[in-house]
Image 1 (spheres, rainbow, N blue to C red):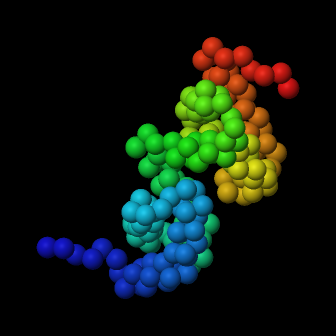
Image 2: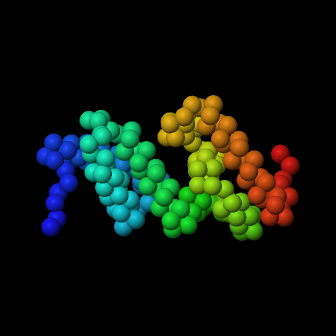
Image 3: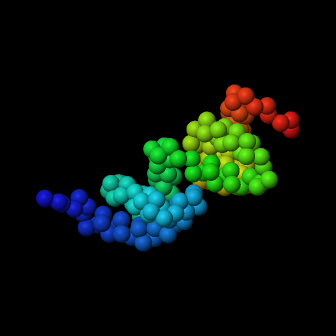
Length: 169
């Protein structure tokens, strides 16, 4: 006995949200480094969550859907213990970089929490602005900058604890 839990107005709202924002959510997930079946699975999970919250959704739920997409990504990475963003970021290091240095940085990034790792990678490796990061995380630029500084400090500590000297700046 399978019942559709959505009333007709809620079903129409979800359909409208999907039509209006599906491409945005897919692009966000791609921008975060996902493709193929993983992209499809995460994209679908965002809208499954939207269905669960259909009664609470407003007509323009784009910001909420983007926030859900970020949460789905964090949960995916936590569950799978994959550090896809770190892998992509490390590829941006110069190809001339010493493989040992890349491994040290990788271990340092692995020691950070998911959000801290995002701040360091997006700012230092991808070159995003503080304003872009702040907007995506829904915080002020000042708060985002403080988070980047704190994440860098923790990365430095992790690398030093790994027995490596930090180069003089």
